[in-house]
Image 1 (tube, rainbow, N blue to C red):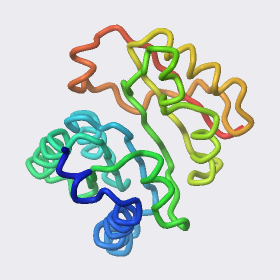
Image 2 (image 1 turned 90 degrees about the vertical axis):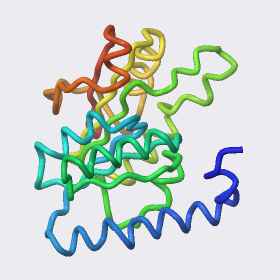
Image 3 (image 1 turned 45 degrees about the vertical axis):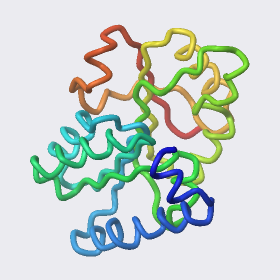
Image 4 (image 1 turned 120 degrees about the vertical axis):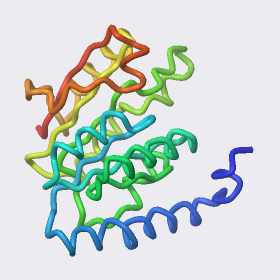
Length: 200
């Protein structure tokens, strides 16, 4: 069994872990730097992209989350080598992480790159981009917030596009891509499609 699931198998324990992360790392960072823009990458992988993004956006607080321990470990090493003091990583599930963070803190930009497409129809309910997720995300962002999505899976791209088109929370936009920098997954998956969205 994964060490994380074994150690934090109860929902209450995982909630406490997320709250402790914000209390110990993010809130002190906000207080010491007076930075209030928080950007989140969901499924940060080995941290290639978010490390480069944090390096180029020192006025922002950046967070990367992923469910795989080795990825978080590698991402953290990259952060330490780059001395990205405005960047923090945590192993966490996206919905729980968003739900458990302090309500007074909101995300300015949310990045979702190459998420699991769950290609089988019976598994579509497991896809991250759903109407319920878009509604939740709106509660934890603000009117100037942006959602950026990228995938190599054509059907999942069309699915995501449709979910946003029918959403009463978000709409498709043509915002400039915040940073073009190859990630581990992007190197493996050179053919991809991208979209952005903002509040409706």
